[in-house]
Amino acid sequence: MREAWRLWWEGVPENPDAGFTPSGWDLEQVHANLRAETLRALLDLEEADSTRQSVRRAILESAAMALHLECILRLGEPEKKALLEGYRAELEPGLENAWRGAVLRWMVLRRYASLKYDDAVIDDWFHYFMHAARPYVREKVRVAREFVLQMDESAGRIARIYDALLDELQKDALKAPPKKRFVRPDLP
Image (cartoon, rainbow, N blue to C red):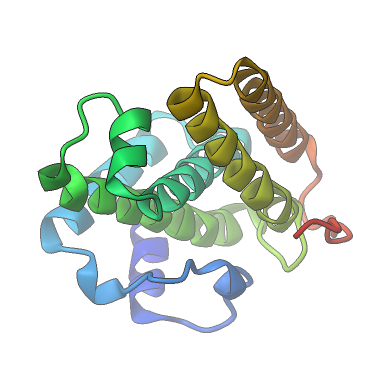
């Protein structure tokens, strides 16, 4: 894990995930405390259970969290207050740090999976997940906003459908063989 961390921070080329770096991602904004906290969590994961499946699961959880937070960060204050219980404007930096931490975790874990399991190539299970999950999450957040702000029951049902779709995507990604390439889904 330390090697993956070092290589990621040094920006060693041949990163198959370069196209998934979120807009607004700035390495300089990842503060020392967040770096140390993230490295500790990654080392704990490696020590506790670093099977290919557990690493994939951690990658998918972090990526899904990052996608959700990215969508929520784009919302206005009233929507954030409605969707996030206890949200106040002064909590925005913490929300941004949570997003940065989730992005950092999946990026370093992908490097780790590549080094340890040779499980990171272009158009693999993770890329398929990201291509499909991004529009699902975007729509889920949109309909969840409608559900909360307009009390639209049908929007609540649709949000639950997107949750089920995301769960299914994660299950499929966990089962995919290493290095298998997938055709990019035709989603916006």
